Image 1 (cartoon, one colour):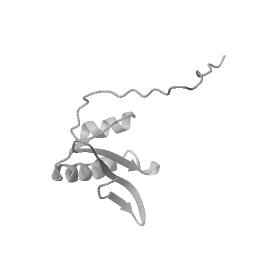
Image 2: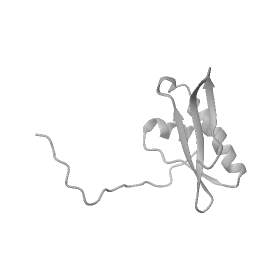
Image 3: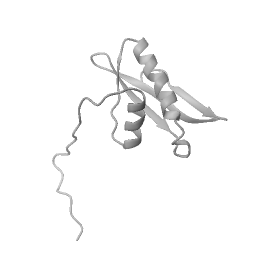
Length: 100
């Protein structure tokens, strides 16, 4: 991350954290982590909101790439809109075997 880390703690344990890496063209690529035993409590929204606010204050465009449904739900809750898709292809590997 190139931003500060925005964290929530329970006792001495960090249970959620967010931040971003500055990308070209003034983009802030967000990262959000929540401890597995604390998921489903809207902690991601809290830390991600702080990171998004920081990026906007810095004149950056926050970007959220959601691959999993829970991540997409958080992004939508914070007002992000889907503008495209990403396709990743691995070249040069042997084809995957199919179990019979």
